[in-house]
Length: 357
Image (cartoon, rainbow, N blue to C red):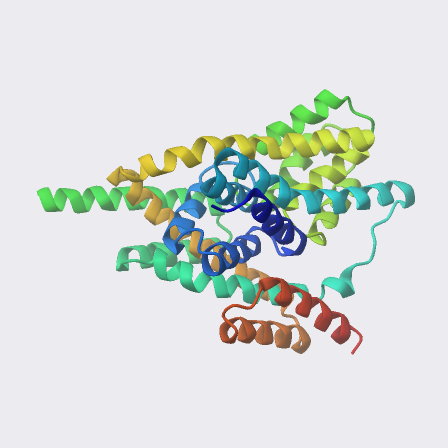
């Protein structure tokens, strides 16, 4: 049996090095949980990814909770989730404190210049085995391609995932028929606002910006400048981007506001995963739900590929970043057991050195 200490150390490490958003986090998780430790099969991991995409909240954070629950039940769920969140919350809290003191964010561009190309390689490397499990037949391949094209052209990933799931169910019935024939805000208000955000937010954490713009800026609780700076702070810290809530909470109510905002935005994820994970084995016994989940799994891999392509278009802007990405991918393919942490650190070091050329 996996110890709680091992679970905690693993997700503390992932929370400290997982730059690049949910797709990158899940890619690193797949490498650690499936390939290196064998805690579950690629198929079961993919099923959890698909199921997680169907509930609100930060996908990668909820995946850590699923992994923890699979190993040690409720205790594992809490330990894995809290450990993954902790580094981002701590780093963002420190940045929020410094921002309040000096009114500006640190210049981290040269330190993260090489991380994004390395992360692209990690995502691409994870998409290969997940794709082999997800695209089981020609129907799922076409569904995946349709979602890939749709998301590349800007269709919301949640609409694409649910549409793919619905198409999978319709095709199942068709097949079946054929066979048969900055102001100080009160603490409770901060907690409830971020709890609602965590409970309603679908898709990647980056949708958070639009949601909070409507909830905070439009109502005069926060300036748009501070909101933009808070999102920027989330970009150059590892772990879940929803740790942005820590930064915003600090600006709204100091350290108490920071803690309440963090608790509020992540608490729904703990509750959703605690309810979903025990039900998943029973739901999978239903042929209709299995058809839905298989289609969502294929769509999920397509969304991961979309993220990889879009990140590549944004990050691979010159020969230096391209070289880092190619070398990172080659290292992952050649050294099968290489820890993704070394890829991130190597990318950061290479980026720092090449930045001045």
